[in-house]
Length: 438
Ligand SMILES: *Cc1c(COP(=O)(O)O)cnc(C)c1O
Image 1: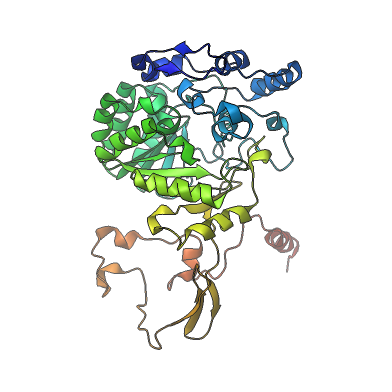
Image 2: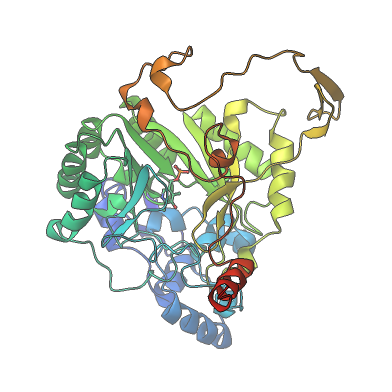
């Protein structure tokens, strides 16, 4: 195997066994401009270097030799791999609306390394390390922090929190990249979580199949296989990333019974094109990976040049829905700034409503009528599932409680509006009440 990235034919020969050894790849990760220039033969002017050095000081550089080898050196300035991994001076432009932690992950953290946002699932940051630093990272604030992986004892508070919250049925390992941990350590963490009786599924979010597919080894598979049902979400953004090595890694995971999903980020200049996303999605399902989310780029600092209007995402979804397999389309989501969680957005298909009719349009532009039943025997829901004619037959059913919009739709809850607690009108009311001594 040749380290084929030098244009000037000073090709460095690396044995295949070494090249495909993930630890070799990590050890030889490209972290400086000098290394990048030496390996690729690309030369930057002194002026460019100065700006790039400043950028790297703020947002460090790290590219695995494997991922670097995917860059088309004859066309690198618009190369999707280059754009995702090599710093742009534009990252230094931080705008007023950008935030270090737009999703308030640190504010929603009840225990170190844990983010608890939704009722039934949590995010556990088991590693602060990544093999490649995505330039569009939403956790850019953490990139280049002192690289660290919490020791087992440091995670205990998070484990305890999960143990004490019976509603948590889904634990998502994230980071950094959880697959930066050794097989043994990952095994220990997965084992600890799997022993919590109310945890029904474990998920891992990792970009290894994309940036370092050799991390998917037989010994890793042996560990992962033990923790079914296990879901792995990876992060392909462009069809070019689906190389034979990546495909092999995905096949190893799928063959071992792991359910695979993909989370892409919509990135200007990289994949903001219906044909690119469609090709990507179709190639993913061909490799047994379900497109899961397509993210609108977050409001993290220094990402403005990557951001598209939301309408771009809607346009892309318009080209997927109906046009290709239903399981080949991701849900397009905006992760709410301020920590509201993911909000799905898609084109409108409902055109109008009559008393018992809904007018819809399809992907071809055909306008159609759906006649609703004139008579529908609605089941009054008082949350007493035991005596309901619909047979849920679950002991837990009684404990059901409603949150948010669901509350407004419920038959029994008296709430008729949801009012933000920091609403100005309410503040005024309080003030009024205080002053009103009648
Ligand atoms: C994305 C996310 C999850 C998982 O959300 P799903 O929609 O279930 O995939 C959980 N917690 C946090 C904090 C998240 O950002």
